[in-house]
Every structure is written in C-alpha cells, then in structure tokens.
Image 1: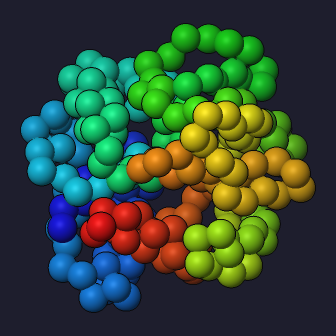
Image 2 (image 1 turned 60 degrees about the horizontal axis):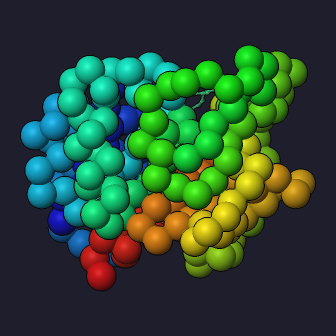
Length: 200
Ligand code: GLN
C-alpha cells in the first residue's frame, strides 16, 4: 500500500509517524510518499492533506500542478484524510471567521461548509476530549490549532463527531475531514480508518 502525504508545510513528519504506527497496528505493509510534485501521486492508495495554512498549501499545490492531480485522484475515489487546513482544502464552501469569503485554491469536493479560524484569538490552540466512537475509537484527547469548524454538511456528507455542538469530523464517501490534529494524539484510530478504507 502506498500512502501519499502532501508535504509543503505543516505536520508531514507527524502524519508520517502516525501512519507508520497505524500500518504496524494493522500489520499492513505500506510506503509513505511525500507529495510535492504531481508524479508523487502516482499509484497512491490513500492521501493525507495535513494542517498548516490552507491558502499557502493551495497556492503552492496549484503552482506545481498538484492541485488538479489531487482533485482528480480524490474525485475518482481514492481514500483521503484532510486535517485542519486539509479539511478546509476538501470543503466546497469556505469562509474566514474574520475576513469572510475570499477566494483561495481548494480541492472543493466535499459537501461541507467550513469557517476558518473559527475559535478566534483567545482559543487559537486548545486541547479537548473528543468522541471517536463513530469510527471505532473512544474518548480521546486531541489538539486544535487555529482550527476551523465544520458548520454544515449536506448531500452525502455526514458528521462523525461534534464538540459542544460544533462538527469536528465529517465524512463523505472516500473523504474524511477533521478540524483537529489526529497526528498529534495518542490514538492512531483515524489513520487506521483511512488505511482500512484503502484496503477494501
Ligand atoms: N488556520 C489555518 C487555516 O485557516 C488552519 C490551521 C491548521 O491547519 N492548524 O488554513
């Protein structure tokens, strides 16, 4: 199995480590590829789009021709996990809590509305216990870093977890979006979920 992780900025290393742990737990052989050029996406069985700054990731990916390739792969059904900025990249509708709607390069395949920087200044980063039981996990401590919120799902997109009535994880077909950072938590359940999807 080959798992491509978009590697322009943000937590590539942590996602790679967490993916390795998840592969070990599931006793699956897998290779991790740092995705920087379109060719890096060749033959991938799963894709991870990490956190970072969604505008930067989008602009760089577009410049290097990776954005179109990502769109094509994801729309063709390759299992994909987008975390934080990655969730923003997947969304069809994006607003910034402060500046409102501003166009930015997106993958735009998921029927979710996302508000960037939802939790504002005083809570730019925080930890919380979230419920991952919908995907076979338990209550887990995770970290939110200048996190977005998923404020609406429609069509085939469904909320998988909420924190204080705000959606923090959603899924549509082959796509999973989390507003928190699963690579910075003790559980590998989200990465295992992605790998299991890719194995089917
Ligand atoms: N605030 C970032 C954005 O709007 C996302 C933060 C993150 O990925 N940790 O793109």
